[in-house]
Length: 87
Image (cartoon, rainbow, N blue to C red; front, top):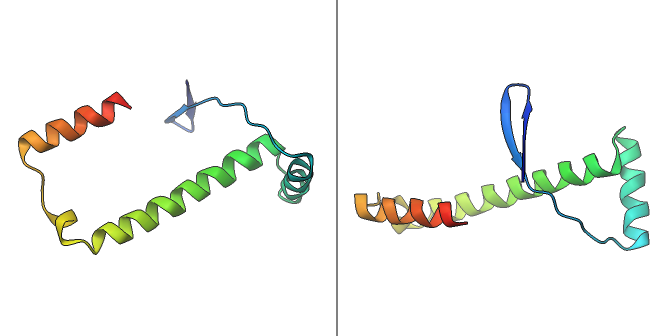
């Protein structure tokens, strides 16, 4: 993992090599050029946007579940935070 400081906002990044089919790489490269971006930057931007969209869908679904509106007890909150830190 790498931490960078972009415009006074600290961002932790995870480095991962991926394999792309040649056709996929060519298609994404053309799309990146249309936006004046490198392939790497374009893929990172698209993945960030996809993750944000999925997060919004999950939050919207949770907002409709009554149990999701219930506050955690102190013990439950501590356990939840401990689990998050273990990821």
